[in-house]
Image (cartoon, rainbow, N blue to C red):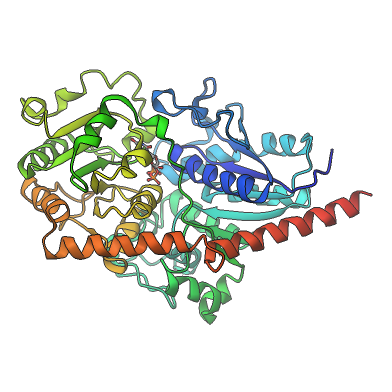
Length: 483
Ligand code: UDP
Protein backbone atom coordinates (compact mmCIF):
# COMPACT_ATOMS: atom_id res chain seq x y z
CA UNK A 1 0.00 0.00 0.00
CA UNK A 2 1.27 3.48 -0.90
CA UNK A 3 0.97 6.47 1.45
CA UNK A 4 -0.12 9.34 -0.78
CA UNK A 5 0.94 12.90 0.05
CA UNK A 6 -2.67 13.89 0.63
CA UNK A 7 -5.21 11.89 2.68
CA UNK A 8 -7.38 9.35 0.91
CA UNK A 9 -11.03 9.57 1.94
CA UNK A 10 -13.43 6.67 1.52
CA UNK A 11 -17.12 7.54 1.28
CA UNK A 12 -19.83 4.90 1.43
CA UNK A 13 -23.23 5.74 -0.08
CA UNK A 14 -26.26 3.63 0.81
CA UNK A 15 -28.75 2.79 -1.96
CA UNK A 16 -30.69 5.56 -3.65
CA UNK A 17 -29.75 8.74 -5.43
CA UNK A 18 -30.87 10.76 -2.41
CA UNK A 19 -27.90 9.17 -0.58
CA UNK A 20 -25.40 9.21 -3.42
CA UNK A 21 -25.92 12.88 -4.34
CA UNK A 22 -24.81 14.29 -0.95
CA UNK A 23 -21.71 12.05 -1.01
CA UNK A 24 -20.83 13.48 -4.39
CA UNK A 25 -21.15 16.98 -2.95
CA UNK A 26 -18.75 16.03 -0.18
CA UNK A 27 -16.34 14.34 -2.59
CA UNK A 28 -16.29 17.37 -4.87
CA UNK A 29 -15.42 19.70 -2.01
CA UNK A 30 -12.69 17.45 -0.59
CA UNK A 31 -11.02 16.96 -3.95
CA UNK A 32 -11.35 20.44 -5.40
CA UNK A 33 -10.61 22.48 -2.29
CA UNK A 34 -8.32 20.24 -0.30
CA UNK A 35 -6.66 18.14 -2.95
CA UNK A 36 -7.68 14.93 -1.17
CA UNK A 37 -8.05 11.61 -2.97
CA UNK A 38 -11.63 10.36 -2.72
CA UNK A 39 -13.19 7.00 -3.47
CA UNK A 40 -16.97 6.71 -3.28
CA UNK A 41 -18.32 3.19 -2.84
CA UNK A 42 -21.93 2.82 -3.89
CA UNK A 43 -24.24 0.10 -2.69
CA UNK A 44 -26.72 -1.15 -5.26
CA UNK A 45 -30.34 -1.96 -4.64
CA UNK A 46 -30.66 -4.39 -7.53
CA UNK A 47 -28.37 -6.41 -9.78
CA UNK A 48 -27.32 -4.94 -13.08
CA UNK A 49 -24.37 -3.17 -14.60
CA UNK A 50 -23.51 0.16 -13.05
CA UNK A 51 -27.12 1.01 -12.27
CA UNK A 52 -26.23 3.65 -9.73
CA UNK A 53 -23.55 5.28 -11.76
CA UNK A 54 -26.22 6.54 -14.07
CA UNK A 55 -28.99 8.96 -13.49
CA UNK A 56 -32.23 8.57 -15.38
CA UNK A 57 -31.84 9.86 -18.92
CA UNK A 58 -28.32 8.44 -18.89
CA UNK A 59 -26.70 11.42 -17.24
CA UNK A 60 -23.53 10.08 -15.71
CA UNK A 61 -22.01 11.36 -12.48
CA UNK A 62 -18.64 9.87 -13.10
CA UNK A 63 -17.43 11.98 -15.97
CA UNK A 64 -13.84 12.66 -16.80
CA UNK A 65 -14.07 16.07 -15.08
CA UNK A 66 -14.68 14.37 -11.75
CA UNK A 67 -11.66 14.04 -9.56
CA UNK A 68 -12.98 11.28 -7.38
CA UNK A 69 -13.23 7.59 -8.10
CA UNK A 70 -16.72 6.07 -8.00
CA UNK A 71 -16.94 2.33 -7.45
CA UNK A 72 -20.24 0.45 -7.60
CA UNK A 73 -19.94 -2.55 -5.27
CA UNK A 74 -21.04 -5.85 -6.82
CA UNK A 75 -24.62 -6.66 -5.87
CA UNK A 76 -25.13 -8.72 -2.72
CA UNK A 77 -28.53 -10.37 -2.39
CA UNK A 78 -29.84 -10.08 1.19
CA UNK A 79 -33.48 -10.69 0.39
CA UNK A 80 -33.50 -13.94 2.37
CA UNK A 81 -32.88 -11.95 5.56
CA UNK A 82 -35.82 -9.62 4.98
CA UNK A 83 -39.29 -10.20 6.32
CA UNK A 84 -42.37 -9.41 4.27
CA UNK A 85 -43.47 -6.73 6.70
CA UNK A 86 -40.07 -5.06 7.00
CA UNK A 87 -40.16 -1.35 6.31
CA UNK A 88 -37.69 0.89 4.58
CA UNK A 89 -35.17 1.43 7.42
CA UNK A 90 -34.94 -2.27 8.19
CA UNK A 91 -34.62 -3.19 4.52
CA UNK A 92 -31.86 -0.66 3.94
CA UNK A 93 -29.96 -1.66 7.02
CA UNK A 94 -30.14 -5.40 6.16
CA UNK A 95 -29.08 -4.64 2.60
CA UNK A 96 -26.11 -2.59 3.81
CA UNK A 97 -24.96 -5.22 6.32
CA UNK A 98 -24.47 -7.68 3.46
CA UNK A 99 -21.74 -5.44 2.03
CA UNK A 100 -19.49 -5.31 5.11
CA UNK A 101 -17.16 -8.13 3.93
CA UNK A 102 -16.93 -6.56 0.48
CA UNK A 103 -15.92 -3.17 1.82
CA UNK A 104 -13.42 -4.76 4.20
CA UNK A 105 -11.79 -6.50 1.23
CA UNK A 106 -11.81 -3.26 -0.78
CA UNK A 107 -10.15 -1.31 2.04
CA UNK A 108 -7.54 -4.02 2.48
CA UNK A 109 -6.59 -4.05 -1.17
CA UNK A 110 -6.47 -0.32 -1.82
CA UNK A 111 -3.48 0.98 -3.63
CA UNK A 112 -3.58 4.25 -1.66
CA UNK A 113 -3.78 3.92 2.10
CA UNK A 114 -7.24 5.13 3.29
CA UNK A 115 -7.29 7.67 6.11
CA UNK A 116 -10.93 8.62 6.65
CA UNK A 117 -14.14 6.61 6.35
CA UNK A 118 -17.40 8.51 5.97
CA UNK A 119 -20.70 6.64 6.06
CA UNK A 120 -24.28 7.86 5.92
CA UNK A 121 -27.17 7.05 8.22
CA UNK A 122 -27.55 3.49 6.93
CA UNK A 123 -23.83 2.77 6.93
CA UNK A 124 -23.19 3.17 10.66
CA UNK A 125 -22.48 -0.56 11.08
CA UNK A 126 -19.39 -0.05 8.90
CA UNK A 127 -17.80 2.31 11.42
CA UNK A 128 -16.01 -0.53 13.18
CA UNK A 129 -14.20 -1.33 9.90
CA UNK A 130 -12.40 1.99 10.25
CA UNK A 131 -10.80 0.73 13.49
CA UNK A 132 -9.31 -2.23 11.63
CA UNK A 133 -7.52 0.17 9.29
CA UNK A 134 -6.71 2.88 11.84
CA UNK A 135 -8.88 5.34 9.95
CA UNK A 136 -10.82 8.32 11.31
CA UNK A 137 -14.55 7.64 11.10
CA UNK A 138 -17.33 10.12 10.54
CA UNK A 139 -21.03 9.84 9.94
CA UNK A 140 -22.37 12.20 7.32
CA UNK A 141 -25.96 13.28 7.94
CA UNK A 142 -27.10 14.62 4.58
CA UNK A 143 -29.89 16.39 6.43
CA UNK A 144 -30.12 19.11 9.06
CA UNK A 145 -28.82 19.39 12.62
CA UNK A 146 -32.33 19.28 14.07
CA UNK A 147 -32.81 15.84 12.57
CA UNK A 148 -29.45 14.77 14.04
CA UNK A 149 -30.56 16.03 17.47
CA UNK A 150 -33.82 14.11 17.19
CA UNK A 151 -32.01 10.94 16.13
CA UNK A 152 -29.53 10.91 18.98
CA UNK A 153 -32.39 11.33 21.47
CA UNK A 154 -34.36 8.35 20.17
CA UNK A 155 -32.61 5.75 22.38
CA UNK A 156 -33.95 7.67 25.38
CA UNK A 157 -37.54 6.99 24.37
CA UNK A 158 -39.07 4.19 26.30
CA UNK A 159 -40.03 1.32 24.01
CA UNK A 160 -42.90 0.46 26.33
CA UNK A 161 -44.57 3.83 25.92
CA UNK A 162 -46.43 4.56 22.71
CA UNK A 163 -45.68 8.07 21.63
CA UNK A 164 -48.58 10.45 21.93
CA UNK A 165 -47.30 14.00 22.15
CA UNK A 166 -44.58 16.24 20.76
CA UNK A 167 -40.97 15.22 21.18
CA UNK A 168 -38.94 17.54 23.36
CA UNK A 169 -35.24 17.70 22.57
CA UNK A 170 -33.21 19.51 25.16
CA UNK A 171 -32.17 22.96 23.93
CA UNK A 172 -33.76 22.47 20.49
CA UNK A 173 -37.06 23.19 18.79
CA UNK A 174 -39.51 20.46 19.76
CA UNK A 175 -40.76 18.05 17.11
CA UNK A 176 -44.56 18.30 16.80
CA UNK A 177 -46.53 15.08 16.94
CA UNK A 178 -47.35 15.07 13.20
CA UNK A 179 -43.72 15.61 12.23
CA UNK A 180 -42.16 12.81 14.28
CA UNK A 181 -40.50 10.06 12.25
CA UNK A 182 -42.68 6.99 11.66
CA UNK A 183 -40.53 4.39 13.49
CA UNK A 184 -40.98 6.27 16.75
CA UNK A 185 -44.71 5.56 16.66
CA UNK A 186 -44.27 1.87 16.27
CA UNK A 187 -41.93 0.50 18.96
CA UNK A 188 -42.98 -3.06 18.10
CA UNK A 189 -41.69 -2.77 14.54
CA UNK A 190 -38.13 -3.68 13.54
CA UNK A 191 -37.68 -0.16 12.12
CA UNK A 192 -37.76 1.18 15.68
CA UNK A 193 -34.86 -1.06 16.74
CA UNK A 194 -32.91 -0.18 13.61
CA UNK A 195 -33.37 3.54 14.26
CA UNK A 196 -32.23 3.15 17.88
CA UNK A 197 -29.14 1.19 16.87
CA UNK A 198 -28.25 3.77 14.21
CA UNK A 199 -28.51 6.46 16.89
CA UNK A 200 -26.24 4.49 19.23
CA UNK A 201 -23.73 3.79 16.43
CA UNK A 202 -23.50 7.51 15.63
CA UNK A 203 -22.09 7.96 19.14
CA UNK A 204 -19.18 5.66 18.24
CA UNK A 205 -17.99 7.87 15.37
CA UNK A 206 -15.19 10.42 15.79
CA UNK A 207 -17.52 13.15 14.58
CA UNK A 208 -20.58 13.95 12.55
CA UNK A 209 -20.76 15.99 9.38
CA UNK A 210 -24.13 17.67 8.80
CA UNK A 211 -25.40 19.32 5.63
CA UNK A 212 -26.28 22.60 7.30
CA UNK A 213 -24.57 25.81 8.34
CA UNK A 214 -24.36 27.99 11.42
CA UNK A 215 -26.77 30.71 10.35
CA UNK A 216 -29.39 28.25 9.20
CA UNK A 217 -29.67 26.46 12.55
CA UNK A 218 -27.82 28.50 15.17
CA UNK A 219 -29.88 27.29 18.15
CA UNK A 220 -29.65 23.58 17.36
CA UNK A 221 -25.94 23.69 16.53
CA UNK A 222 -25.27 25.60 19.76
CA UNK A 223 -27.21 23.01 21.76
CA UNK A 224 -25.42 20.08 20.14
CA UNK A 225 -22.17 21.68 21.25
CA UNK A 226 -23.10 23.10 24.63
CA UNK A 227 -26.36 21.79 26.05
CA UNK A 228 -25.47 19.68 29.09
CA UNK A 229 -28.28 17.17 28.70
CA UNK A 230 -27.61 16.64 25.00
CA UNK A 231 -23.86 16.38 25.60
CA UNK A 232 -24.50 13.64 28.12
CA UNK A 233 -25.95 11.41 25.43
CA UNK A 234 -23.79 12.62 22.55
CA UNK A 235 -20.43 14.28 22.99
CA UNK A 236 -18.79 14.16 19.57
CA UNK A 237 -17.87 17.15 17.41
CA UNK A 238 -20.53 18.20 14.92
CA UNK A 239 -19.20 19.79 11.73
CA UNK A 240 -21.69 21.84 9.72
CA UNK A 241 -20.44 21.36 6.15
CA UNK A 242 -23.36 22.72 4.16
CA UNK A 243 -24.92 23.66 1.98
CA UNK A 244 -23.39 20.88 -0.09
CA UNK A 245 -25.43 20.67 -3.24
CA UNK A 246 -24.81 19.07 -6.57
CA UNK A 247 -23.12 21.58 -8.85
CA UNK A 248 -25.14 22.96 -11.75
CA UNK A 249 -24.09 21.47 -15.07
CA UNK A 250 -25.38 23.80 -17.77
CA UNK A 251 -25.08 21.07 -20.40
CA UNK A 252 -27.85 19.10 -18.61
CA UNK A 253 -30.46 21.76 -19.32
CA UNK A 254 -30.70 22.31 -23.01
CA UNK A 255 -32.98 22.24 -25.99
CA UNK A 256 -36.64 23.04 -25.83
CA UNK A 257 -36.91 23.24 -22.03
CA UNK A 258 -34.16 25.82 -21.76
CA UNK A 259 -35.59 27.83 -24.65
CA UNK A 260 -39.00 27.81 -22.98
CA UNK A 261 -37.56 28.84 -19.59
CA UNK A 262 -35.58 31.64 -21.22
CA UNK A 263 -38.82 33.07 -22.64
CA UNK A 264 -40.66 33.19 -19.29
CA UNK A 265 -40.64 36.23 -16.99
CA UNK A 266 -38.37 36.25 -13.94
CA UNK A 267 -39.64 34.25 -10.93
CA UNK A 268 -42.80 33.20 -12.79
CA UNK A 269 -42.45 29.40 -13.08
CA UNK A 270 -43.38 26.86 -10.39
CA UNK A 271 -41.23 23.72 -10.43
CA UNK A 272 -43.00 20.59 -9.11
CA UNK A 273 -41.06 17.49 -8.11
CA UNK A 274 -41.08 14.85 -5.39
CA UNK A 275 -37.43 13.83 -5.35
CA UNK A 276 -36.01 10.49 -6.35
CA UNK A 277 -38.63 8.38 -4.60
CA UNK A 278 -41.86 10.34 -4.11
CA UNK A 279 -45.11 9.20 -5.70
CA UNK A 280 -48.73 10.37 -5.40
CA UNK A 281 -52.02 8.50 -5.56
CA UNK A 282 -54.20 8.77 -8.69
CA UNK A 283 -56.63 11.07 -6.93
CA UNK A 284 -53.85 13.33 -5.65
CA UNK A 285 -52.31 13.47 -9.11
CA UNK A 286 -55.64 14.65 -10.55
CA UNK A 287 -56.07 17.27 -7.80
CA UNK A 288 -52.58 18.57 -8.36
CA UNK A 289 -53.20 18.83 -12.09
CA UNK A 290 -56.37 20.82 -11.48
CA UNK A 291 -54.66 23.02 -8.92
CA UNK A 292 -51.91 23.86 -11.41
CA UNK A 293 -54.37 24.54 -14.19
CA UNK A 294 -56.73 26.64 -12.07
CA UNK A 295 -53.86 28.78 -10.77
CA UNK A 296 -53.07 29.76 -14.37
CA UNK A 297 -49.42 30.01 -13.40
CA UNK A 298 -46.53 28.65 -15.40
CA UNK A 299 -45.10 25.32 -14.27
CA UNK A 300 -42.68 22.47 -14.88
CA UNK A 301 -44.00 19.22 -13.41
CA UNK A 302 -41.90 16.07 -13.07
CA UNK A 303 -44.63 13.48 -13.36
CA UNK A 304 -44.49 9.82 -12.27
CA UNK A 305 -47.16 7.15 -12.62
CA UNK A 306 -49.41 7.24 -9.56
CA UNK A 307 -48.99 4.53 -6.92
CA UNK A 308 -51.66 3.94 -4.30
CA UNK A 309 -50.73 3.77 -0.60
CA UNK A 310 -46.99 4.22 -1.09
CA UNK A 311 -45.63 7.75 -0.96
CA UNK A 312 -42.08 6.51 -1.63
CA UNK A 313 -43.21 4.34 -4.52
CA UNK A 314 -40.37 5.16 -6.91
CA UNK A 315 -37.79 3.86 -4.41
CA UNK A 316 -38.97 0.27 -4.56
CA UNK A 317 -41.14 -0.06 -7.68
CA UNK A 318 -39.46 -0.54 -11.01
CA UNK A 319 -40.54 2.36 -13.21
CA UNK A 320 -38.47 1.55 -16.26
CA UNK A 321 -40.30 2.31 -19.46
CA UNK A 322 -43.26 3.92 -17.69
CA UNK A 323 -42.48 7.34 -19.07
CA UNK A 324 -44.43 6.42 -22.21
CA UNK A 325 -48.04 7.64 -22.14
CA UNK A 326 -47.47 9.31 -18.79
CA UNK A 327 -50.19 11.86 -19.54
CA UNK A 328 -52.87 9.14 -19.28
CA UNK A 329 -52.91 9.86 -15.54
CA UNK A 330 -53.91 13.50 -16.02
CA UNK A 331 -57.40 14.96 -16.45
CA UNK A 332 -58.58 14.73 -20.07
CA UNK A 333 -57.47 17.77 -22.07
CA UNK A 334 -54.98 18.97 -19.42
CA UNK A 335 -52.01 18.87 -21.78
CA UNK A 336 -53.83 20.84 -24.45
CA UNK A 337 -55.21 23.47 -22.11
CA UNK A 338 -51.85 24.06 -20.40
CA UNK A 339 -49.63 23.67 -23.45
CA UNK A 340 -48.47 27.28 -23.39
CA UNK A 341 -48.13 27.69 -19.65
CA UNK A 342 -46.67 24.39 -18.53
CA UNK A 343 -44.27 21.55 -19.21
CA UNK A 344 -44.80 18.00 -18.02
CA UNK A 345 -41.58 16.01 -17.82
CA UNK A 346 -41.86 12.26 -17.26
CA UNK A 347 -39.98 10.69 -14.35
CA UNK A 348 -36.87 12.84 -13.92
CA UNK A 349 -35.68 16.37 -14.72
CA UNK A 350 -32.37 18.23 -14.38
CA UNK A 351 -33.48 19.77 -11.08
CA UNK A 352 -30.46 21.74 -9.92
CA UNK A 353 -30.24 23.35 -13.33
CA UNK A 354 -33.96 24.19 -13.41
CA UNK A 355 -33.92 25.70 -9.92
CA UNK A 356 -30.92 27.84 -10.86
CA UNK A 357 -32.80 29.40 -13.79
CA UNK A 358 -34.00 32.95 -13.10
CA UNK A 359 -37.51 32.24 -14.44
CA UNK A 360 -38.18 29.74 -11.65
CA UNK A 361 -39.92 31.45 -8.73
CA UNK A 362 -41.35 28.61 -6.65
CA UNK A 363 -40.79 24.95 -5.85
CA UNK A 364 -43.54 22.53 -4.88
CA UNK A 365 -41.30 20.00 -3.18
CA UNK A 366 -41.45 16.87 -1.05
CA UNK A 367 -38.77 18.56 1.05
CA UNK A 368 -36.08 15.93 0.82
CA UNK A 369 -33.10 17.76 2.26
CA UNK A 370 -31.19 17.91 -1.04
CA UNK A 371 -34.18 19.45 -2.78
CA UNK A 372 -34.71 21.86 0.10
CA UNK A 373 -31.10 23.05 -0.03
CA UNK A 374 -31.19 23.34 -3.82
CA UNK A 375 -34.18 25.65 -3.41
CA UNK A 376 -32.57 27.72 -0.66
CA UNK A 377 -29.25 28.26 -2.45
CA UNK A 378 -31.17 29.52 -5.46
CA UNK A 379 -33.41 31.79 -3.39
CA UNK A 380 -36.61 29.94 -4.40
CA UNK A 381 -39.55 29.83 -1.90
CA UNK A 382 -41.18 26.45 -1.28
CA UNK A 383 -44.60 24.85 -1.16
CA UNK A 384 -43.74 22.07 1.28
CA UNK A 385 -45.35 18.74 0.48
CA UNK A 386 -43.56 16.19 2.70
CA UNK A 387 -44.04 12.49 1.97
CA UNK A 388 -41.65 10.21 3.89
CA UNK A 389 -38.50 9.93 6.04
CA UNK A 390 -37.65 13.17 7.87
CA UNK A 391 -39.43 15.35 5.30
CA UNK A 392 -42.11 16.51 7.76
CA UNK A 393 -39.37 17.91 9.98
CA UNK A 394 -37.69 19.58 7.01
CA UNK A 395 -41.02 21.13 6.05
CA UNK A 396 -41.55 22.41 9.60
CA UNK A 397 -38.05 23.88 9.62
CA UNK A 398 -38.43 25.79 6.34
CA UNK A 399 -41.91 27.00 7.22
CA UNK A 400 -41.71 27.81 10.93
CA UNK A 401 -38.03 28.59 11.54
CA UNK A 402 -36.96 30.03 8.23
CA UNK A 403 -40.23 31.54 6.99
CA UNK A 404 -39.51 30.55 3.39
CA UNK A 405 -42.31 28.03 2.82
CA UNK A 406 -46.00 27.28 3.14
CA UNK A 407 -47.54 23.91 3.95
CA UNK A 408 -50.98 22.54 3.07
CA UNK A 409 -53.42 22.35 5.98
CA UNK A 410 -53.76 18.56 5.67
CA UNK A 411 -50.58 16.51 5.76
CA UNK A 412 -50.19 15.05 2.26
CA UNK A 413 -49.56 11.65 3.87
CA UNK A 414 -52.82 11.75 5.81
CA UNK A 415 -55.30 12.95 3.21
CA UNK A 416 -55.77 14.43 -0.22
CA UNK A 417 -54.79 18.06 -0.71
CA UNK A 418 -57.60 19.60 -2.74
CA UNK A 419 -57.30 21.61 -5.96
CA UNK A 420 -58.56 24.87 -4.40
CA UNK A 421 -55.92 24.82 -1.70
CA UNK A 422 -53.21 23.91 -4.20
CA UNK A 423 -54.27 26.80 -6.42
CA UNK A 424 -54.18 29.23 -3.47
CA UNK A 425 -50.73 28.10 -2.38
CA UNK A 426 -49.33 28.45 -5.90
CA UNK A 427 -50.77 31.93 -6.26
CA UNK A 428 -49.40 32.98 -2.90
CA UNK A 429 -45.89 32.01 -3.94
CA UNK A 430 -45.88 33.11 -7.57
CA UNK A 431 -48.23 36.11 -7.46
CA UNK A 432 -46.74 37.26 -4.17
CA UNK A 433 -49.39 38.56 -1.80
CA UNK A 434 -47.99 40.08 1.42
CA UNK A 435 -46.90 36.70 2.76
CA UNK A 436 -45.42 35.75 -0.60
CA UNK A 437 -43.34 38.94 -0.71
CA UNK A 438 -42.03 38.27 2.80
CA UNK A 439 -41.16 34.68 1.90
CA UNK A 440 -39.23 35.72 -1.18
CA UNK A 441 -37.30 38.39 0.75
CA UNK A 442 -36.51 35.93 3.51
CA UNK A 443 -35.33 33.20 1.13
CA UNK A 444 -32.97 35.69 -0.52
CA UNK A 445 -31.48 36.36 2.94
CA UNK A 446 -31.02 32.63 3.49
CA UNK A 447 -29.40 32.39 0.05
CA UNK A 448 -26.94 35.11 1.03
CA UNK A 449 -26.04 33.55 4.35
CA UNK A 450 -25.55 30.19 2.60
CA UNK A 451 -22.89 31.84 0.45
CA UNK A 452 -21.29 33.38 3.55
CA UNK A 453 -20.93 29.93 5.14
CA UNK A 454 -18.25 29.25 2.53
CA UNK A 455 -16.26 32.41 3.17
CA UNK A 456 -13.23 32.43 5.42
CA UNK A 457 -15.29 33.45 8.47
CA UNK A 458 -18.07 30.98 7.67
CA UNK A 459 -18.96 27.79 9.55
CA UNK A 460 -18.49 25.52 6.53
CA UNK A 461 -15.05 26.87 5.76
CA UNK A 462 -14.05 26.28 9.39
CA UNK A 463 -15.53 22.78 9.50
CA UNK A 464 -13.71 21.66 6.37
CA UNK A 465 -10.50 23.17 7.75
CA UNK A 466 -10.85 21.12 10.95
CA UNK A 467 -11.74 17.92 9.11
CA UNK A 468 -8.81 18.40 6.74
CA UNK A 469 -6.43 18.98 9.68
CA UNK A 470 -7.64 15.86 11.44
CA UNK A 471 -7.05 13.85 8.27
CA UNK A 472 -3.57 15.28 7.65
CA UNK A 473 -2.60 14.45 11.24
CA UNK A 474 -3.95 10.92 11.02
CA UNK A 475 -2.10 10.34 7.76
CA UNK A 476 1.16 11.39 9.46
CA UNK A 477 0.44 8.93 12.28
CA UNK A 478 -0.37 6.13 9.86
CA UNK A 479 2.80 6.81 7.91
CA UNK A 480 4.93 6.90 11.08
CA UNK A 481 3.45 3.61 12.24
CA UNK A 482 4.18 1.93 8.95
CA UNK A 483 7.88 2.87 8.91
N1 UDP B 1 -33.58 15.06 -8.56
C1 UDP B 1 -33.36 15.44 -9.86
N2 UDP B 1 -34.40 15.32 -10.74
C2 UDP B 1 -35.62 14.85 -10.39
C3 UDP B 1 -35.84 14.47 -9.04
C4 UDP B 1 -34.79 14.58 -8.15
O1 UDP B 1 -32.26 15.86 -10.23
O2 UDP B 1 -36.50 14.77 -11.23
C5 UDP B 1 -32.47 15.18 -7.61
C6 UDP B 1 -32.62 16.43 -6.78
O3 UDP B 1 -32.01 17.51 -7.44
C7 UDP B 1 -31.96 16.05 -5.48
C8 UDP B 1 -32.17 14.54 -5.38
O4 UDP B 1 -32.50 14.11 -6.69
O5 UDP B 1 -30.58 16.34 -5.53
C9 UDP B 1 -33.27 14.13 -4.43
O6 UDP B 1 -32.80 14.21 -3.13
P1 UDP B 1 -33.74 14.66 -1.94
O7 UDP B 1 -32.92 14.63 -0.68
O8 UDP B 1 -34.39 15.94 -2.24
O9 UDP B 1 -34.89 13.60 -1.89
P2 UDP B 1 -34.92 12.01 -1.87
O10 UDP B 1 -34.85 11.59 -3.26
O11 UDP B 1 -33.75 11.55 -1.04
O12 UDP B 1 -36.22 11.71 -1.24
